[in-house]
Image (cartoon, rainbow, N blue to C red):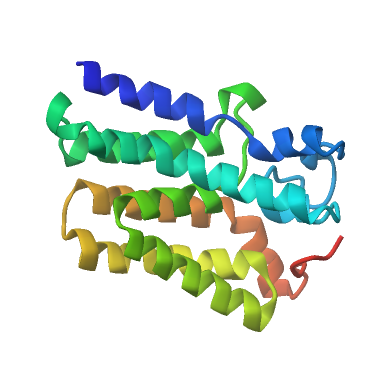
Length: 199
């Protein structure tokens, strides 16, 4: 029972918006009021403050990594299995998407998903980063890079984790991430998607 406390705590941690925190720390407008209106690192970058975008990226990734790593570390002591750990991963990701502190209107979850992947298996996270960087470097479109990394994540989750609950969590996270990018997909098809760094 004590181990199950990780899930609501993970949700609350996921609900912390580092984009909003960064904007207040760097005296920037609320990221929900400009650009894509998404409280995420890419939109914060549109403010022109790279340090704020980096702070957002690292914070959102860390909040995905920390609860999953802690759950895995204490799993033997608390009797947590892959199912409970997968639940923690989903909880922190859903916290980012539907944060209680922002009236359930959160970001798209790219950095938080990356943190979860790194916690599950560092090689999975590094592969996701490599895919994101490669696509972003070629096309300069953040959403396309995120969609590419998300689409491939379940494939290499099977390779690194096998067919188990954590792999299912990666699949659900990937599908949710793609769903949150539906407006971006429409813009990509129409050729209107903004490029990285555009204010």
